[in-house]
Length: 309
Ligand SMILES: Cc1cc2nc3c(=O)[nH]c(=O)nc-3n(C[C@H](O)[C@H](O)[C@H](O)COP(=O)(O)OP(=O)(O)OC[C@H]3O[C@@H](n4cnc5c(N)ncnc54)[C@H](O)[C@@H]3O)c2cc1C
Image (cartoon, rainbow, N blue to C red; front, side):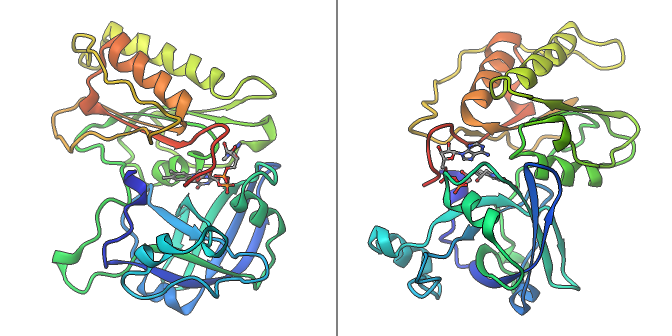
């Protein structure tokens, strides 16, 4: 599981507390975390992921191990004493203010993270796991962010609401000359978030409004793929021959297919969200349309019916 690799010494547990809780839309809640420990937190990329460590009711964080091998010790704990870990995106980090924002999707009380965010208050304690400021360049953290378009200035970003925080952070940092398309599926019309983007990037918020998860976004990405496959006049055709793909059982494995950096790709695509939906898009784009895998990052962020861990 690529995003569970937290054993490197450069990753550590940061003690933080809730500084603000802001309801952004019916399904997005922004939690601003603060704490002196964040002076040591390292920001490593636009779609940077961290782990949040949730309190155990009645015990808080008393059983959470500390020190360099905290992760090994945490894994060895009995279930009842092991604080739940969940993966979230750093929506923004303000080092001078020692503040970090996370945009949570409130999806009911089915999971500990969603349950926590619906009840959290200013002053509540939390722990996050992330990279510490390196003490030397050799220690630069890696593996905590994936967006890497190389020299491509044409992009596709697509995802559901769990990917919206990463997509918004990416959009706000893109070079003004970037062109492309962005498809973000959210639960309702009222869940569209304000975000700035370069003039040449078309951002479409797609409201599910009761439709099955991922269907509307998938349709839009298929339509995008057919224009790429046809080779638009202002961009080189990006399609190789369709290839066979090893199947990924998204109920047993994490779907995490990331290309190595390349300066050669004319188009770069970044796709994240519910794993079954991402798997379908991967099959369509790579096996069906023949999009080169070196151009697309596919990331299953969560799986219907399965808790993380
Ligand atoms: C790299 C990465 C970055 C992420 N960034 C964010 C982020 O910034 N904001 C964010 O909200 N999420 C983000 N996620 C997704 C988040 O980690 C999952 O949604 C996680 O499962 C939520 O934990 P939980 O404790 O609420 O639910 P869990 O205990 O993991 O799951 C309980 C049940 O809820 C279901 N479930 C989980 N998430 C959802 C959902 N969004 N909608 C409907 N049902 C769901 C599960 O299928 C399961 O049945 C990210 C995931 C990854 C891998």
